[in-house]
Amino acid sequence: MNTLNGIKGCGIGLRSEHVLDVIPSGFTPDWLEITPENWMHLPYHYKEAFEEVVSKFPIMTHGLSLSIGSPEALNMGFLKELKTFLDKYKIEHYSEHLSFSSFEGGQTYELLPLPLTRKMIEHVSDRVKKVEDFLGRGLILENATYYTVPYAEMEELDFMNEVMYKSGAKMLLDVNNVFVNARNHNFDAASYIKGLEHDKVAYMHVAGHKYYEDDDIIIDTHGADVCNSVWDLLDFTLDYVDAPVMIERDNDIPSLNDMRREYKILEKIVKNKDLKEKSYA
Image 1: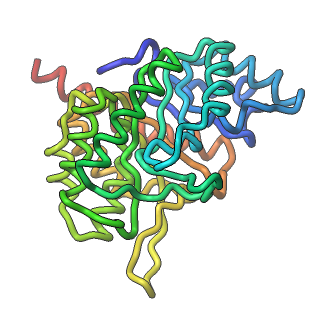
Image 2 (image 1 turned 90 degrees about the horizontal axis):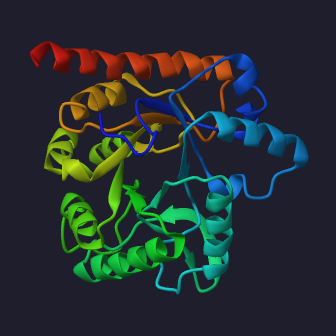
Image 3 (image 1 turned 180 degrees about the horizontal axis):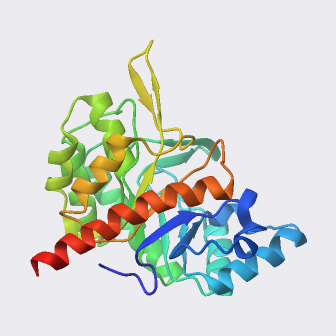
């Protein structure tokens, strides 16, 4: 399996609801992902627990505020805070969404889709290089969900592949997002997975979603258990992509015991795939 300096196997997203309990619980995922914006300014009782967790687990970061596709200049104040945080805790890896979330000086508080154009590929690629140079770290970009596309000269798959090639960034492949977009926009999720530049995938997400029958649409809520269809798509994806994978949960946060139960499902899928590969070696 591909690794990112300690990021290997299976992980979960660390949320504030669990930070006080991770160490005492004895739950030992292979690694943890954190959202840096949620941990930069901590109350003391969280900070102490957070620092203990960071000292004991490999850490990946997954941000929300970079707005890599925004038409505005990069927010250097935010990037300075981010670099200070990453340096302080010696965190090497930083991922973000291939989207934008700021416009005319304000935050949308949503991850909005980018026009699928060659001009946007150039724009994002230029900004990726600036971010990487400033942070002193490579940038990993996630395929986002979208419900409408402002303008498209190409398919999403071609856009993703060209952004990764042109920018040199690695990809965070969100398997749930592929499933949601494929269902909402009537394309084949398996073909999308097969068409990716697999060696560009640094790591993967799985997550839950919600289907709204009246509107016949799936919303990427990150507020439910991973469904069987997404587990099946992950199992398929692991035939093509050899990378760490984690469970992302942002809403309706379950107990740590429930997270552990779902983690065991993920671990079983990944380990079974590894065993099958070894049996053919």
